[in-house]
Image (cartoon, rainbow, N blue to C red; front, side):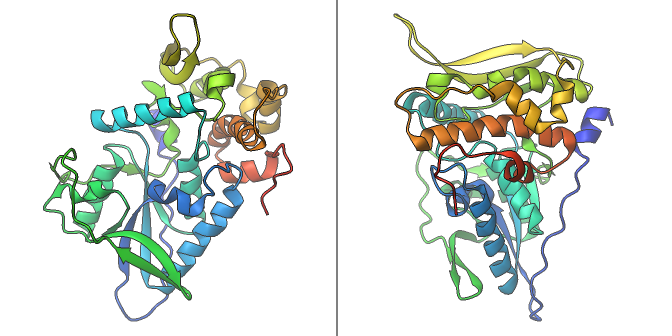
Length: 346
C-alpha cells in the first residue's frame, strides 16, 4: 500500500451508537445523508452548522430510544455518467443564478456530526452513493431512508424504503414510502455484487492523485470568481504533503463575460504539487488571512449572500487545513470562523 492510500485510509469508521436495550432486535436503517440536509441545515443560511449539529444529535438520540441503529451513507465522488451530467447541470445553474442553497463541504460536516454522535458513516468511493447504499442495505438486510425515488429502480431489492422521519415524544418515527411509481426516464438496474467499497475519510480527495473536481462554493461565483481557484496554491501544498509527484487535473465552474461569449465555463488546469505554502496548512488563521484578508463586498449584495460568501471562503481554506492537521472541519469553523453581519445564529 502506497503512502497516499495509507493516509487516506487512516481514519477508522466510528462504531455505531448503541440503541437502548429493549429485548428486541434493533432495526438497521441506512440513511441517504445528503438527501436530508434540509432537515439538519437551515436552507440558505450557511452559518447554521452549530444548529445542524444539534439537529443531528437529536435524531441520533431519538433513534437510540427507538431501538434503531443508523448508518449514514454520503457521496465521496460521482461515478456514473448519468450522475455526473446531473451534478454538472446543477452547479452551472448555481453559478448562473447566483445561488447556493447549502454550505460548502456539507458532506464533510454531516459526516463529522454523525460520527461525533457515535453513528457509523460511509462515504461511497467505488460507485455512486445510491448504488452503494442500495447494495449494502440489500445484503445487510437493512432498511433504506431516502426521499429519492431512484431506490425503486434496483432489480430484486429486498429492503424497505422510508421516505421521511419525524419525532413522537422521545421516539424517532420513520415514515414509509407510499408511492412505488418510477418515472420512465429512470431505468431499472441490478444491484452491485459484491457490495461497493466505502471509506470514512474526507471525500474531497479520494480521486487523488488523478483529478480534483469541485463545484461552486459561494453564491457569488459569478461576480467574485470561484474560491477553489483562489486557494489553489494551498491545495498544491497539500498535494505535496501527500507525496504526490505528478500533475493533478483540477476542474471548477466559473462565469465568463465577453461581447460574444457569456456563460458558465469549466476551467481545467493541470497543477503540480508545490510546498511553498506548506506552513499555512498548519495555521488556519494565517492561511485565511493570506488568501481572504482583503475580501471586498461587491455593491448590491445582500447580507445573506455576503455572509454565505464569507462562510465559503473559510470553508475552502479550512477543509485543507483540517485534513492536513487531522482535525475536525466542524470544530475549526466553530473556533475560527467569524460571521461578518449581525445575523448571528442563536
